[in-house]
Image 1 (tube, one colour):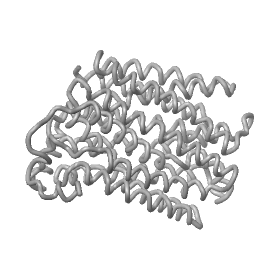
Image 2: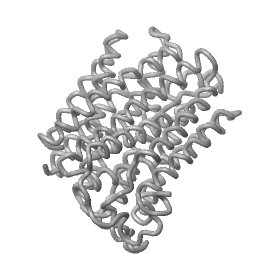
Image 3: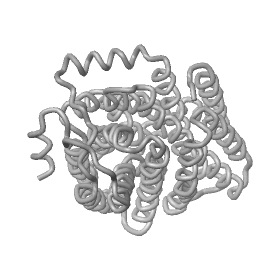
Image 4: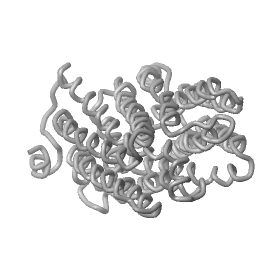
Length: 404
């Protein structure tokens, strides 16, 4: 019903404006939380399964890590195109279609008979994800009151945090008590339920302005690539997810080997540290609205650096503390960078968000591949050194080009 209504609307999704009631506001927040949750329960689901895949498929750490990088790189490849599409078709209809589509390859991943088939289904999962992430970011930038953009974005990011933890935790439990295939079936059902929830609670846009044609969309894309503040934000996004994926991919091998020897369920439980992000992210949204993006980013990077250094100490409680700090800092960085996109773009925000998502997830894809070479030569300490180097790059770029 809502999709048909949007299709008939020539320029704006609704005519006129109206005050958003408290009930409507709650519905929006529920929908955005569920949207983030149902997306990210899929994206990194194989991380705690990597040591198991290493045994089952008789493959190297680098090869099994492709089950992480495949969907992430697919997101990076398709995000700009999805952004352009959403600037033409509208927001809600693209989000719902992508969420429904995502549940199918998630289910089919359970049928994989080889590592290459699993990587293929994972790549197909990633093709649907930009239609959710990039468009949700644009929706938030357009529909939220200016003074509430940070807190609204934080609600969405909190959903991604809880979803990211849930996917890993469910996968670890299923691999231990059943097998890894059951995890994909279960998560596919959750994804489908999430899409129906978003369909029910997410209101149609009231401030979306449709681009008049492909030429206008491409012109806006060129403008984004000439915008120094947007380019800085894209670079920061690249570095943030690179560090997140690198740390939470290769820490599984670090903890599965001696002296820790953790199994899939224990590795899945390690991702409980993500839940601190569910608390910190809304707080970071409030902080963003008060002290600005740049200062929030600097604080967050300091937290990341501290956390990664702690993981070098051979004590499981200390490592968990370090991972908790690192993930907390990453989620705060994500809130700061993603909320800055719409502000820096001004117009054609969906295509701007699409570019952001592309660079962000390209960084994530590289984060599961490049550290593999450091792991092979120097182990975990080489991965940490690479992560710290990129954090320094974040501070340099933001300090020069961001403006609060």
